[in-house]
Image (tube, rainbow over all chains, first blue to last red; front, top):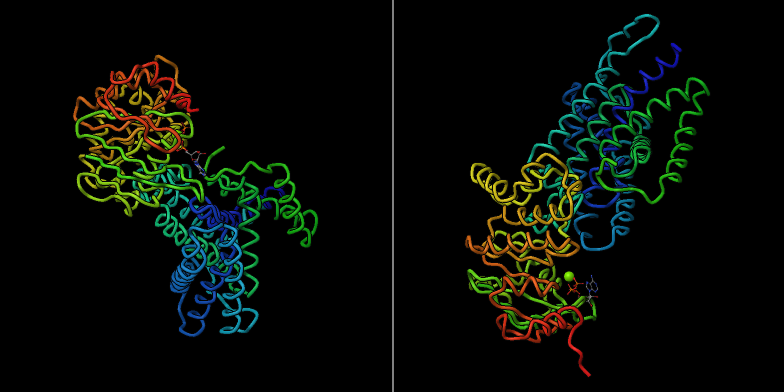
Length: 289
Length: 237
Ligand SMILES: Nc1ncnc2c1ncn2[C@@H]1O[C@H](COP(=O)(O)OP(=O)(O)OP(=O)(O)O)[C@@H](O)[C@H]1O
Ligand SMILES: [Mg+2]
């Protein structure tokens, strides 16, 4: 029982970051009806920039996170211009395939500029875990969960309370009516795309800071976690992305504990297929149902 | 006020509008009647900039609209209540109205207009916080009208507002149309319900298979014949 509680706590912590990754996909999917397959690579570029700033310039945690966010958004701007805006009128498959090509390109560039397998990233906190009644809580993981939660609250506020949020929800649910109200879906889509890249960068920075390092595989890893979490929560739903992220974290940490580390990902992907099969044809952008 | 001249709009090879010319006069209610597939919605989408015509001109208060984006056209004072209402189902009634005022920047004026809408449509006020998807068809139609009005249009276009509504609700919608017009909004209404439309129209057109086949005032053509042609098209041998 204690193990289950401990695993669930650990799972919720990492799940907060998964939720941000899932939101990165969901936000662009809702407004643009496109999957951005370069998402993981965009996050990777940001993380490498943060690691480089740490190593070469001696920047600390906040500086590295800022560099990560800035470069993730800049890489997002590049991808958006190249794959999404240029192909705005054409089939979404074309945008998806071209974003896949950009994924490879960005990863190659990152590997060329920084060829080592791993780079140090400033640690979130080096404080020792808190022990309480047989449970332990890592302060850095707690900080990660808190920041992720704060970012989600800010996103929720933006979507509910701002003119931009109103327009984005309008575009996601009734694009034709949105255009008739004078809202320009292309502009809202571009802004949302960059916001999603920023959130992805933040999620990546939190995870890298907990691990104190980043590897070239991070892009692929972030893509998979984000896609699985989004799918678990019901493709397209915003609250679903959050729930899917948390659920993925909890399921993974329990699978790892009870079945062994090698089962962590196998269970998660097995679940992904089960959910895809069970919910086939029922994805609805940005609704709560 | 609005002058559509010889407009041709096509979907690929299919010309849905084959040179349509209609006009809407300032302060009046103009109706366009015609059967399914005649091109009514296509004309509304062309005027609002959602479709680009292959040919022809659309002048609003002397300014050319062809080539402008939908948002530029809304900003100039033309708003459409779309076919099937298309409310934002997951947004509250109030948010739907706020979205209608998207291009306006003065919060105080928007708030005043919001109050005015709630005064005119008390049912919307009762349901202000409810999501629009839970409203009845008639309420959604009123919301769609109010949302379009929130952009402060000088010309209101309406695409089949009576579609799928019970007779009593249809009467209410047409009463609102007449009221809005009395308060100074010019209206261009597309309908299949010729009986109701002829009661409010100052001028009307018949459109069949992408061509205007009649233009005149109600009474110039027997209502039976208008109804016949608006539902079925004229029987040409
Ligand atoms: N998106 C589209 N792609 C191809 N053809 C279309 C499209 N929309 C409409 N059409 C065709 O264009 C013609 C005119 O359609 P439109 O929707 O303008 O008619 P309508 O008068 O509004 O009919 P209704 O009374 O059914 O609303 C029809 O023949 C229709 O099949
Ligand atoms: Mg129509």
